Length: 255
Length: 256
Image (cartoon, rainbow over all chains, first blue to last red; front, side, top):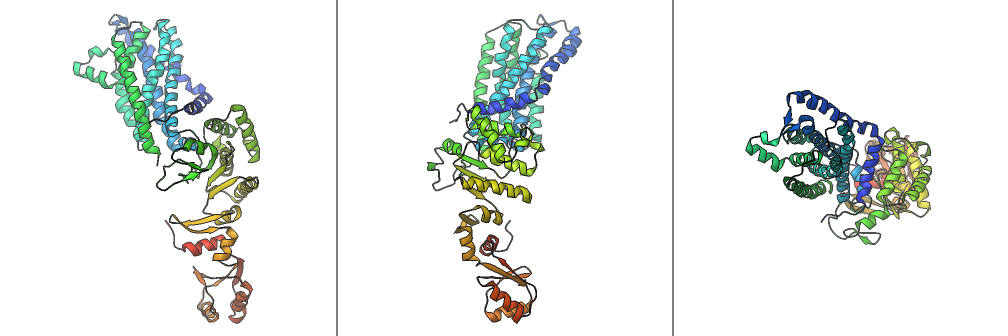
């Protein structure tokens, strides 16, 4: 049984307030990142690539940039940042002395991680529009979908946070899971180029592949039935990791 | 302590806090408790005032009410000047005071304090004691654990001395002292002469390192014997304290 009431939002609001206090720093990455990637990869490297499957290269990578940004912001929020709050700042200990339950603390952290991903997607959208690499109005869907995608990465991140012995060990998932995903999820080249077994492997275990394919369908726009499979994959995985994260965290924190 | 706070699961037996079972009514219990934890877990991302407001939110206290209480508590704990200062910039004593203020944000029926003045300088300790005494005077119930026996002696109406998870004695500090140590302690240097002298009078004594302690209700007689009959020079008489009781009951060996 998972014990979650409306009090979960008091945890979410704590993180939102902390985020807004340092908004100047927090708002830089979503503006700068897409510009750098689009200039370097899209218009630099992209000069040698006329098109990918008939799509101009900057247009091909634009949805991937949003996906990557959502992945990074949500995953790192619920790994390094949550770990600092849990272990160094003892924020969780302080909260569970109040009527807020441990489940609500963890869920609130994950909902916030997802929200952060959504904020980043929303901030990137105008930059991408400026470059003319995403279509409107379908691209507005990037924002709500970023919440779902963000929740997926937040819940996965929280599972690692629950089992990590220390903050340094969080580098393992960052380098061995997140970085390969960044490169091999149909982000900068189509999945079709991968040898078949690896492609199926990527679709089965790299969540970013599904996020990129949905975001690409949104920005082009070009929806296909396969998107529904991706959506289902994300929904099931999110529910699974959500419950798993709470269970692992209970095991870690209830002593 | 953590079981009372409904943070750790109960290991056995039955436990009720404010008449409620800790297994089934955790939220209600936690809503009516105030907790001053041993380690500082104030939120370093926020100022003193914001710490109180954010904590109030966890209790579901409406914003207006929370603001009013936060201002009141900052004044009560003499932290008004530090209202907008981040936690990192507060001294140890101020942080402790802020934690006490935070524990009071929900107007608790029971305040639990785990070593409230550990590591503080004398001024800071006295200020906290003063505040705790005024809370007590207003009719609040305080439960505190401490290793400082002077603190227990000053603050407690009723106290329990525990050792290795067993209750040794229970009662009011003054009664415990009278019962287990006598009114006064006569201390003298530990020399063979003094030992023979005391044996002659048939007085009981305790050995405390390089000193000899005689617990007695007749300190003057004992001191006179030592000074005059035995011609011993370094003799001190002082009132017995809770620390004497504690050491007599639990022994002098180090507990790791």
